[in-house]
Image 1 (cartoon, one colour):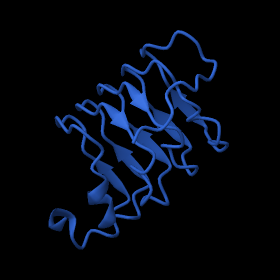
Image 2: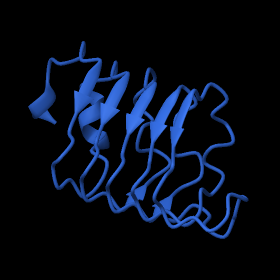
Image 3: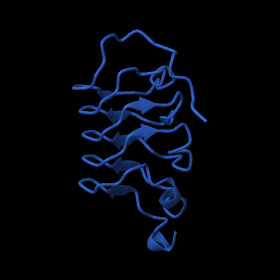
Image 4: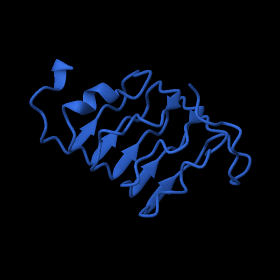
Length: 126
């Protein structure tokens, strides 16, 4: 994606308040050093297991106030220390938090959670 060409030193990126329908993972090829990513208040419906695969330094992720209904297992990088996924439509955490051992801040407020027990009925979709 040429839009972000030569921006490899970017460490903080905010795409908030844009009606983006999905995580723009192709954009991350040009900005692999992002440590803080804000994609709040958009139209994202799903977080897939490879959406953040290129972001090896991602520590803070804000995807609050979207339309997220499903998070695939292992969709969040192990490097995360701060995660805000509040104000979405998530009914199951689908085991996504189990490997985030360095987590310091976690917001999952205002979702459709009825239990915090791990439900495995939402396995990875193809």
